[in-house]
Amino acid sequence: MSTEPLLLAPAGGDGGGATATKNKGRRMGIDEALSAHAGEFGRWQLRHFALVSAAWALEALHTMVIIFADREPAMVCAAAGGVCGDRCAGAAAGWEWADGAASSTVAEWGLVCGERYKVGLAQAVFFAGCMIGAGVFGHLSDSFLGRKGSLQVVCVLNASFGLLTALAPNYWAYAALRLLTGFSTGSVGVLAFVLATEPIGPSRRGAAGMSTFYFFSGGIAALAGVAALFPRSWRTLYVVTSLPSLAFVAAVVPFVSESPRWYLVRRRADDAMRVVSAIAAANGRTIPEDVALKLDDEDEEGKSVDGSADSSSSGSIVDVFLSRTTRVRLVLSVLINLLASVVYYGLSLNVVNLKTNLYVSVVANSLAEMPAYLLTALLVDHFGRKPLAIGTMLLSGVFCTAGSLIAGEGIMRVVRMACGVVGIFGIAATYNLLFIYTAELFPTVVRNAALGCSAQAAQMGAIVAPLVVVLGERVPFAVFGASGIVGGLLVFYLPETMNKPLYDTMAGLEEGEKTTLLG
Image (tube, rainbow, N blue to C red; front, side):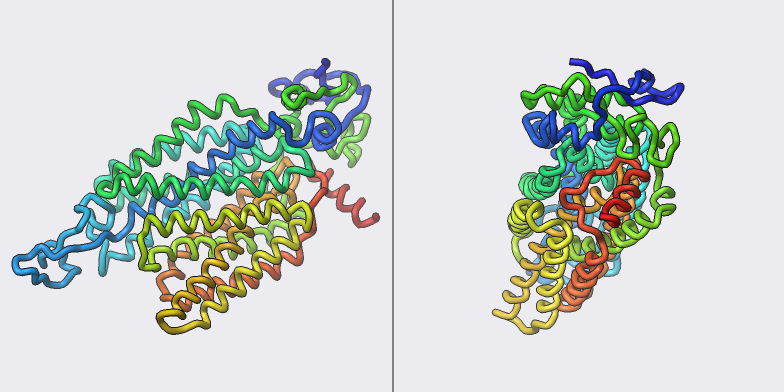
């Protein structure tokens, strides 16, 4: 089988793209090659998807470890006669931590009463790091580092920073290391999502993309189990939750392929064809010898649709803003992701206020999200991204608003909690759906940069969420409700992407939009 590309590479191009050949035979985009010849979701894609998506569990471990490491353990009165003073005075007033002073950062550094704000500060700092890192690595993965290379780098970094966090001598060193961990963790999910879904065909990409969050929820459930095994040492917990990232780099990354789409836009057409041919072989199919890959902004002569002889092999967030089409999409995506994040993280972190067993509550919350992922995975390719995003976000907003209107104790508290469960069901579905939806709104050359921007907005929402949670029981519900409703209404202004091509270049997207309007 011939895999020689017919895509002309510029002089001095890197890697396999340095070979130039005559234009002959059939030239097609990657979506068309997958649909017609290689297979949209066969054995190769299933294996690759499972391996890459395991990185989501790593993000869950590094992100949600704060629930247990920064928890406030129970205190017991150890004074003679069982009479203790002010709890804020701690040991000086006869109080001791039930699980020992090393059980959490709160216990070790006395982060209670007037020092309680430091717990929220460390959490906000982590998400601030996530916001910065998402933008940085989103750009790097679209440029020279690639999807696979970027994922490998961030996993090594967050493992290293996580292990160093276990050695933090004081609170401020701890907060600084959480900032660095966030910097490397914030882009893990985005990188894994793009790398896992780009080799999948258009008709299966939606359902597959919606399934990535199972790994995140599974990681949260596993974290609860791990935390239950080490209730007396937050430092040990950080070590145990950091080592899997190193294991992932050593045992999984070598068996993962770089995205053929990234190869193609980087002018490495023979590498792209090599991956597509490997997909076909593993799926029991073949690529005809006269087929070669092309970018979606090229004609049969190898020229871009604007008449130039070569297409841009890379892009940046600046290119997104230069195009009115992608500029509007990015602004809307940023706002919607921010609002969805406020609701998702707000409802998730609110578990500490449920007055129930913390480990059981975290597991229950993670399992409650899974039916939402299943429902959206089943419906996303039937009803489309847009209607489903609108429906799930409004569902969450309406029930959170209803929760804010319910006052009282007893049965009313149960009803309010039920509203929260429905709220997190809806927003979990939205949060998951937004990944596949946002990815399909932008072409390959700027996809990760745009996703990185949206992820930064989501991290801003995550920074706000803990500040909302401390406002009591009803006010947070009102904020979450308004956020869900406004976000759902904003989705109305985005285009539908179901069964649309996954464009490679800015010119290809613009041409596709013109064709759609004329049609």
